[in-house]
Amino acid sequence: EPEVTQTPSHQVTQMGQEVILRCVPISNHLYFYWYRQILGQKVEFLVSFYNNEISEKSEIFDDQFSVERPDGSNFTLKIRSTKLEDSAMYFCASRPGQGYGYTFGSGTRLTVV
Amino acid sequence: AQSVAQPEDQVNVAEGNPLTVKCTYSVSGNPYLFWYVQYPNRGLQFLLKYITGDNLVKGSYGFEAEFNKSQTSFHLKKPSALVSDSALYFCAVSRRGSGAGSYQLTFGKGTKLSVIP
Image 1 (tube, chains in turn purple, cyan):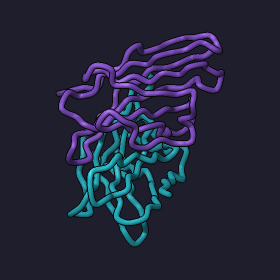
Image 2 (cartoon, helix red, strand yellow):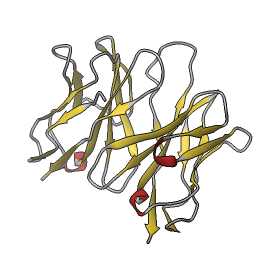
Image 3 (cartoon, chains in turn orange, yellow):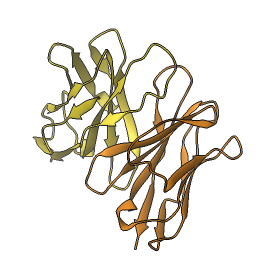
Image 4 (cartoon, chains in turn orange, red):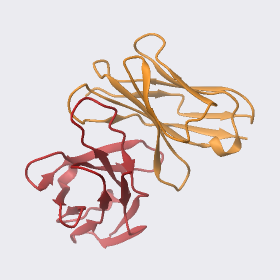
């Protein structure tokens, strides 16, 4: 069964550093998403991406965040200058053009120290 | 704005007993509703969804959920709980639109299910 792959599974970074979280969505999917889950809290929408541009973003997704699909297979989330409160599990998801079958990756646990 | 409420932080049930995990939602228009399960240190696994049609939806691992439009609920059920069902369960809603769109999911805060042997 096709999977959404996220790397790394766990990343530790110092406050103020830039991090890039990587995702390989399912190959024939058209919509791509990032969600995050702060420990013990609910899963929150960050951003959706379609046709090489952001289609929706939440208030969380401020200027420190950016997304990119650089080569037609990878989908990345960049945090320019990490803060302690960015520590969370980040989930990538993708969806085909028709239907509502979201597939989530297994997540990247980001720890900012 | 859309929202999901999971009123119970934790549900405890004895193995072999039926289980129910509650979910109510608020969304403008007709909803798309989902249940996901998360095991410790793992990602979100899809269980089932309601898009249209029969109000009783059957999903993975023997789970089912009933869509109740008048009560705006989508409770998750299983006739006989297993110890391996112990996990964190998330209900989610997405707004239905007329065309292709991003259809972001809004999640509830999750309910921890503990099945006691």
